[in-house]
Length: 348
Image (tube, rainbow, N blue to C red):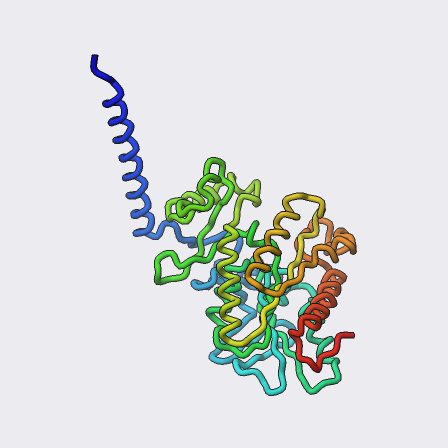
């Protein structure tokens, strides 16, 4: 009696081979027609005249989106809010210059008074020092930016500018944000969406499968349905990508003989939540591994009671003036204690 196992194995093998070939063909087709690229997103405006609060978001092919209020012209940057501030590529003599790369928490082009932001408060405070140094803080933070955007912004607009310190204001957009910055075609920098906790794909989370054009294409299509909009927690990109961009920023600072410091803002939520604790612990471990100086406002905001720091009860992202004041004081203390500020600077 002939065994039926042989033909069965052959059929299964042919079926698997057909499936693999179909996946490969789909991957090549998607890459050839660039179907995995983000063309338009609801989260940013595609029209230069579309208001976002009192800001105007414009598309940027290399970064994703940018603010119209930050105008570059040759070796000059003009920040147009209230009275325009003008900065030159080469910093003035006897100036300690800080570049702030952050998201909407640090963004200055908002309806909030810029003087109530931690960056402006720090600049005003440092310039009260009785020394010969002028302190200049250039804040080019943009709402919804994550570490990938910051690296892209630094690479495009500020690569050879004179800075003494790059200050990264970090929220948890890397976990809950919507974009990953990647050079998928080797020529043009593009943004792609990732979904990291889709049921059935967790097994492959550390493999190249989730970096494929096919998965990006599927994620883009799924995001445009109601499937993802109910839970932002499954949208994001992977910690190793975050690490990659922080490492690039660190190496850039080292090559340019600049200091780097990361100030971490927690969400204004119940801090007993296990998932929030895990996110902060992992971020701390990553920055320690990279030997990047940083400070997490987690404990300070908890001590102050997070609900008292909310601008309004429905806003869990943006601290009010009290929160920014806490951030400024802790930041000033850290920059002084870690000898990042000039030695002539005294910490009150």
